[in-house]
View 1 (tube, rainbow, N blue to C red):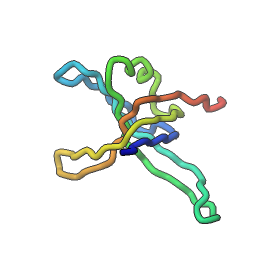
View 2 (cartoon, helix red, strand yellow):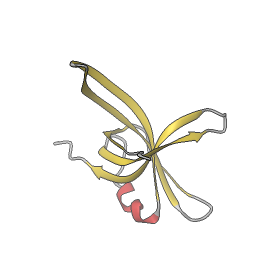
View 3 (cartoon, rainbow, N blue to C red):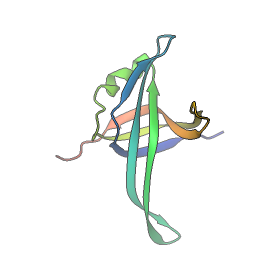
View 4 (cartoon, helix red, strand yellow):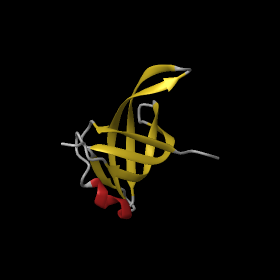
Length: 104
């Protein structure tokens, strides 16, 4: 079953870094994406905010460069997470993160 997502954007919330009880580090943040896409021959504004989580020791070096305002591209898979209040949301589980030079 296919489950792949690539999304670029700007980090819009301060990353939250945690270590699970089993010792696995996690970094959570929110990515804001804005673009113009073509659909049925028309240009359409696309916008979303997507929660992102990246886990594991091998991925933590890149997370130290993730700050509010950073331009990044994330690739990974999506999964539904249920909050304590019972609401569910889609979360992008990052397997690869690339910092994008904003040209400044």
